[in-house]
Amino acid sequence: MKLNKLALLLATIALGAASSASFAANDGGDITFKGSIIEAPCSIAAESANQTVQMDKVTSSVLKNGGKSSPKAFQIRLTDCDLTDAKKTVTATFKGQTSIPQPDLLAFTTGVASGASLAIADARGNLIKANTASLATKLISSDNVLQFQAYLQGDMDGQTGATIVPGEFTTSATFALTYQ
Image 1: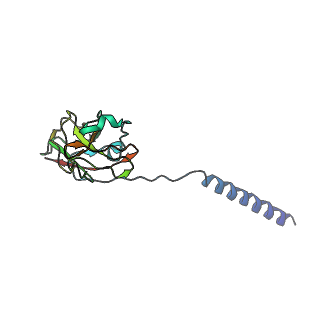
Image 2: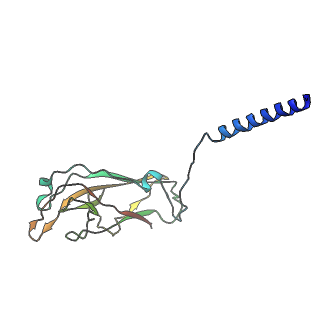
Image 3: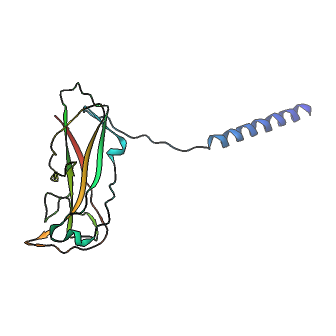
């Protein structure tokens, strides 16, 4: 009888310990790590790879007759650049759906706003035509920041400005870097 009670006590302790271990094992979550390895002289910082540029709320009167909104700055940060590589400059190409009235600019892809398109320019304000490489930027250190700006520009309908329709919009572009 003493042996049965001892076996029952040990079984109860073992079951309790297993139960506690299973509760401790369920305290946690999942972590997913994503990235890629690229053949390039520089790495692209994670915050630059996928970003959202929140444009200002622009009044329709600013865009009339091809008018432009104030530019909104954004950047692509390059890290760990190998300056011993023969490729010491970089260009950026912003690829996306182009605007029919302004084929050098990007079209709004969703939303009700219309009558304007999105332009991307370099830090000096020089337009970078959609799907066309920017001017080359020299890599000057192991970390480089490529500065850009985006703005809205009213579309033209022949010799007059297109009708500006207020509302929300979204447009997107992928960027490709080419080292030379």
